[in-house]
Each structure stands twice: as structure tokens, then as C-alpha cells.
Image (cartoon, rainbow, N blue to C red; front, side, top):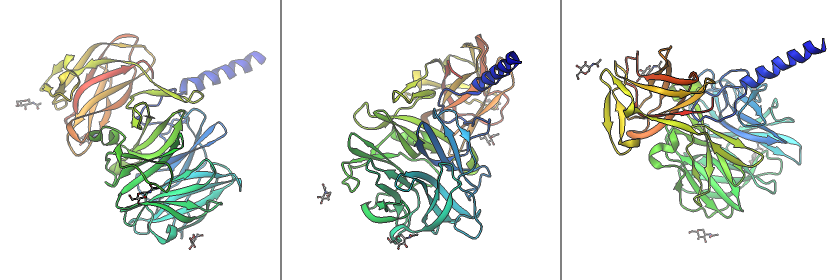
Length: 449
Ligand SMILES: *[C@@H]1O[C@H](CO)[C@@H](O)[C@H](O)[C@H]1NC(C)=O
Ligand SMILES: *[C@@H]1O[C@H](CO)[C@@H](O)[C@H](O)[C@H]1NC(C)=O
Ligand SMILES: *[C@@H]1O[C@H](CO)[C@@H](O)[C@H](O)[C@H]1NC(C)=O
Ligand SMILES: *[C@@H]1O[C@H](CO)[C@@H](O)[C@H](O)[C@H]1NC(C)=O
């Protein structure tokens, strides 16, 4: 009996371990511990003890209109369990299923021992331009809705919050038809704002987050281009009332922040984690998360593109997984696939005209037999997504989305998890598809899955 119990405990443990993820893979379809795609867009992270809570927009229906503010929890930022929804629709209010509830952010108010959620509250045509507030006695709620209004009588659309070391909290928001970006101080309950402390006139900023580092405030924000990505910026000031330094890019400008929009910035040791959304307006629930290290190693905050990476929360550090690169031009071309030359490609070359009969095959790709992440580096100069088929050892093909890269010579990467056998494998891209795939620069096969 004891042996049987031990045995089933072991089976359970092994099953749990088999499911556990160890790495962050920007742009992949992240799943929760139940295997469902994580629906927590435009969200925020709250740490309570050793647990991280991720509140975000559930876009399961692909509609922009309100369905729920979800609540996920994790102790490692990688394995997320979905809890009961934090905030759900209430008919006849500004949080009904025909309203907008975006960018939920939760603060803990230690005076009241209360969790306070702020969000962008709007009508379906974004004409109301308000903030909403809801409160709860536990991180996932359920939250009770207090109301929606225009803070200090002015519009508020994309917003974030910031809690300073002394417990004072601030609302960060795009106001006045998204022209002016404002920072206003909250009251001691975090129920309302009382004082505007700063305005960046004409800044046209959205999607803000603030990180405090060595006594300085760093503001991160995008510009305003709807759901489409743009080069996100950083600013520094010694006080939240300014003056802010002039804007600088957080990533190479032509990558449009690696096709993402800032959402939340979480301190990690002497660095931070940039948490961005890769919005996909035609299929909102398939919008992906782009989380990347935000490193100050150059003296100013810059995103570090890493296909596959991990965090060490205790040490406050991150590390990139290592992988093996296979250049597309070294593969075997089939059909009308052809070599393209441009200095933006690694090795100066890529393979174009994949799809519609054009293929590239990589032989002798070394696998570990455990499931591995593979990143496809490509250019897609269209104004919409392409996709590419990937098959291993002649097996069934996976279809991988390739967002437009903002020009054919801008290279981005998308991940796909492949089951390579231990030893040598053959990987073919572009077969069996009647549309053109992105131009393939290279693939990198990581040792982790
Ligand atoms: C928020 O504060 C403003 C005054 O600054 C006040 O007019 C407004 O009624 C308050 N809103 C709520 C919901 O308390
Ligand atoms: C901020 O900038 C304004 C305009 O350039 C200037 O008048 C003001 O003195 C500056 N404030 C500080 C604290 O540097
Ligand atoms: C391949 O290219 C040739 C020459 O441009 C063209 O006639 C043919 O239709 C192409 N084949 C496919 C499958 O696109
Ligand atoms: C694949 O991409 C093409 C555009 O290149 C698109 O028309 C097609 O719908 C996509 N297929 C899927 C299944 O998303």
C-alpha cells in the first residue's frame, strides 16, 4: 500500500516534471500548466511573497470587447497556473461585454491590505477614454468594480501604474487625444488620482511602464500606431515630475521593438524584464508575448534579443540558451527557391521564393531526442503575415507564422518546437504550401525544449 502510494506519487511528480517549462521563448504560443494558451494580454505583474501574479486581458473570443481580466500565478515566471478570473463583465456598467477593459495593472495597498486594479476603461469606439478601478482582498480577487471616470477630468487611454519605494502610487497615461502623456499621483487608498505631477506635451506616448534603478526613474513607452508596432522609447529623470531626457530607442529602430509594444517592465537584479505584446488585430487571441531582458550593460537600457532564455530570480540574472546555426544558403534548394544576397543577411545570403514549390532542406541537423526549440530567422517585406511549413525527417509539417518584419531586409526570428531525434535529422521548409514564405536567412537549433 505504501509502495503503491509512493509509486503513484512518483508518477504524478514525473508527469508534472514532464510538463514543466524551463525557458522563456518570445513569440511562441505560451501555454499554462493546464496546456491552454495563456490569455493575459496588455497585462501586469504583481509580486506577493515569492509568487508572481499576471493579470491580463482574456482575448479568447478575438474581440477587443471585454471578456475577463485573467489571473495567472507562478513562482518562476515560466510555469503559469490559471486561477479564477479577477474581473468579469457587469451588464449595464462601463465593464459590460460591449465595453473595453484594457491594460489591467494591480497594486497592493499595504495601508488597507487591499489589492487595487487600475485599467483603461472605454466604450467600444474608444470615445469615453476613462480609467476604471476595482478592489479585492486577494491578488486574484474576485475584484469588485468601483467605477470609471476621466482622471482629473481629462482623457485617459493607454495607461500603466507605478508604485514608488515610499508606497506612493502614480497613474501613467495617454491623455488629450493621445497627444500629451501625463503622470498623476494617487490618493493614499489608490482609489483616485489627486495631483498631476508631470506632463510630456505632444509626446504621443502609449503603453507606459516605469522602472526605478539607482535612484533614477526610467520610463518606457511606445508611440501611437494603433495595433501596429513602432520603435519604443526610453526616458530618464531624477524625479517623476521631470525633467525627462529626450527619447531614445530601446531596440534597433527598424525592428519596431522586435515587433512588439511595451506593456510592463519588471525589475530583475540590476536589469529588468521587458514584457511586450505582439498584437495581432485580425486574431487578437493569438497575439503573442515578447518578453526580453532589458539590460543596462551599455549604460542605457536596451533590449537584448534572445530566442530562448531563462531567468535566475534568486540571483537577479538571465541567460541565453545556446544553439547551433544552420545557414539557409548552405541547405539544398528545391523548386524555384533561390539564393538572395544582401548585407542584412547573416553570411550576406538568404533563400527566397520558398513555397509554391520552392523548398530548402537542411541535412545532418543534430538533435537531442527531447524536443527542441528552433528559431527561424527570416524577412517578410509584405504588410501582413506570411507563414512557412517545417517538417522533420519527412514527417507532418508544422505551419509557423511569420509576422511582417517591416521590410524585406529586416530580419526577425520566430520559434517552433520540433521533435528531432537524437543524432542526425533532415528539416525541410516551404514544402506543400501554395503561398510564399518569408525569405529564410538561417535557423538556430537550441539544446532545450
Ligand atoms: C476623483 O477625484 C476628482 C477630484 O480630483 C473628483 O472630482 C472625482 O469625483 C473623483 N472620482 C472618484 C470616483 O472618486
Ligand atoms: C525643466 O525644463 C524646463 C524647460 O526646459 C526648465 O525651465 C526647468 O528649469 C527644468 N527643471 C529642472 C528641475 O531641471
Ligand atoms: C518557377 O519559375 C518559372 C520561371 O519564372 C515559372 O515559369 C514557374 O511557374 C515557377 N514555378 C512555380 C511553381 O512557381
Ligand atoms: C499563410 O499565409 C498566407 C499569406 O502568405 C495566408 O494567406 C494564409 O491564410 C496563411 N495560412 C494560415 C493557415 O494562416
